[in-house]
Image 1 (spheres, one colour):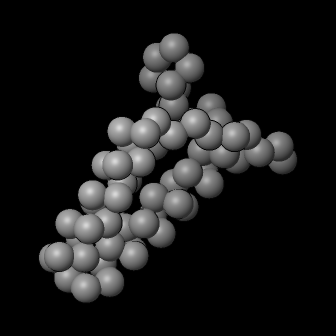
Image 2 (cartoon, rainbow, N blue to C red):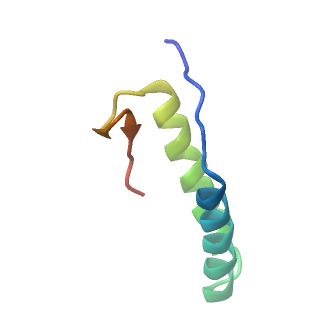
Length: 63
């Protein structure tokens, strides 16, 4: 199966980092679990790039 590359907007990267920090404040180690979920979702999009095409080639995968 062919894998595609992803382009993650800088704002999205900041949101992910802020999410990791927020979750770690709620419970130590929870940010790591959140980050693992994000990475897993990104891998799913790489291998299944046609998942939920929303508009203009933007693909979405809810976490």
